[in-house]
Length: 565
Image 1 (cartoon, rainbow, N blue to C red):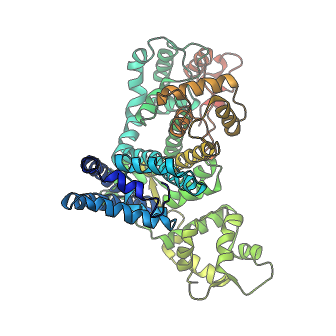
Image 2: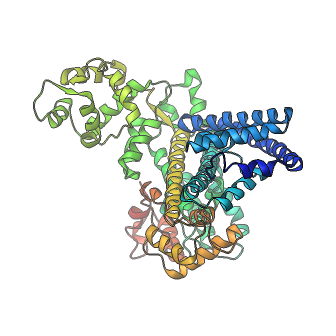
Image 3: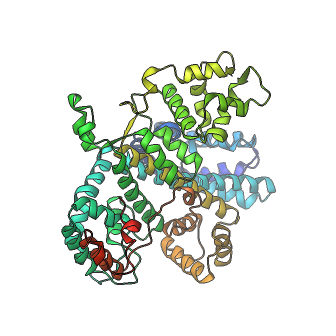
């Protein structure tokens, strides 16, 4: 939006003198008001499902949108000159170069005809550098709104699917009691083209553990092998499980997450508390234990996080988010520090000696807090500093002594127990935390793509800069692949003069390119897949498990390699 002085505002008033144009503007305002009311309703829906910083941001937008609707209602009740006065008022504010405040109430308005005419008039009459910069600011603001809409869509889609317990509970039940039987019935319907299929090793493990007897496992493997060819690298398990997660099967990132969650659930089963030793029968928690996929001690879950998540920051964040509701934050921080000390085979004395190089009587609490990351592999977010100070009672002194640190760390006798009933987590909760972290990283990765496009400094991206951007994101991309992606992006946006920012982000996200943050999300140790001959050999192995002398030559170690104890 251009800046203008009082003399520059004259074309604005001359353009608005015609009463018909003002009536038309009022009509369009009325249409916009209805559109805003609809958006306001949608915002309220998203607002009800968000928390924390996202909640505060959405609340601001909700309030501002409601205020805009109120302003339009006022316009309807007064004469048409009210509009002229309003425009004059905001343009005078614009002279002070405070565009954000000057048009704060109008920042969600995108298609008001008479304001567009004002912009057009000013752009034609004023081509100065000052006006050009002002227009660029408005364009950037519009671009920012588009980016926020895309990010909100990612965030809200994740929350809508996984915010409540029931979808995860349903997923767990489908996985444990249904998928591995039902998929055999649907296998030909799903794979009508008789395409070859490969299987992850933990699927074989699951079949063996779930069915118990070798004859049943052999029957399942033989039935499955009939539908396999040699060269395919995808599985029906993956398709079914991906669809349960409501992810698109052609998205490689979603495939990876689907397989990873499968692996996590199997690992959880190895350490979960069995009903016969679970002590909550009298309180009715035994039934809840079954509904939420079982429970496990946090001390047994944390090693899984260290195994699968290479990023210390992500791993620590998951440990924080897994805090049971009945444990307050201060006690939980102390529990995490105790666990980290034990894991690093460290003591309070050795921990303090490693950071107290000057042999002082006491240390600043900031020094102790920051040392948790390097010395104990525990990365607490900055907002946990006040919780840390409260837990170790150093808000007033700003310092911590070794004896005080040790005293507060062990002052709660109940928490000294290595496995206590408060410090447990359900399978459902673990899955929710993993998916939520994944969604957060997806948003960060999408923001990274926005920045890549902005560096191009153009509203449309032709193929050459698109290819250059891809090389920046993914070094090994070929020109042929880049051309395919570019043409696919043009089809997605249904506009062929060049890729817009939204089209650029959409096509890369669709094909799993540019998710820079996601590659740090997790590691997985599953094998790439089995082929037909391998399946037949495994089937033969399982059939002759009790008599290993009959196992085909060359497969003596296959049980140890592919079927876990």
